[in-house]
Amino acid sequence: MFAAILDTNVLLPSLQRDFLLSMAVEGLYRPLWSEAILEELRRHETRLRVERGADPAAAAARADRLIEKMPTHFDDALVTDWEGLDDTCGLPDPHDEHVVAAAVVGRAGTIVTENFKHLPAELVPNRIQVLHAKDFAANTADVNPGRAATALRVLAARFHTPPTTPREVLKVLVTRYDMADVGEILEPVLDDG
Image (cartoon, rainbow, N blue to C red; front, side, top):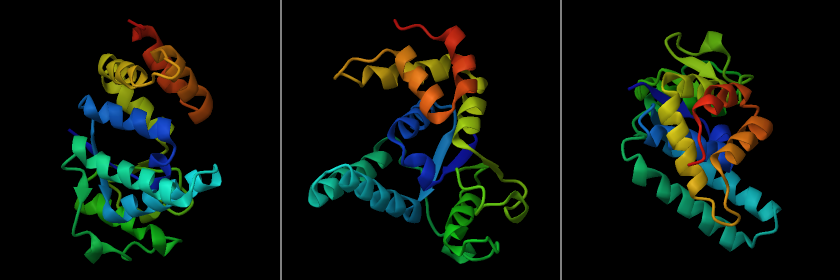
């Protein structure tokens, strides 16, 4: 099974994160991250919740729960001992070196990110592909559309207030996260049953 580093910026949008991780639960790929990525996610998740009006302590507690919950399904996702490769690629923003270092140590075939400006392909080791979340999601769904549709159904079943169908979740992925290719792949195989 191929592995992919999920950068903080693709883990932060909750529905996108949940869809990507749901496909991993279905065995379509192995997600990877580092403590540095999780710490960035914790900070940004807390900040977003505070900006949306949450009490800072409650926002931090929710972010902590998210970070603590992620390893329950992916106990082999944490890449360690990447620090020796930090600052070796010469990226435009040295703060992004940890993402490439974790990808190399974790033997990832892909870095999933929205930060192409700071992760230019010519500076990333050439065996590692850098993809936008929408492209990675489409490539992954295309490997096995039936399992990707199952991931979408399981994700939709978690919505109770209000109840949401898989097609409704897919519509949000298409419109909010520009996953039109995912829509084209899953629509023919998706049933709401």
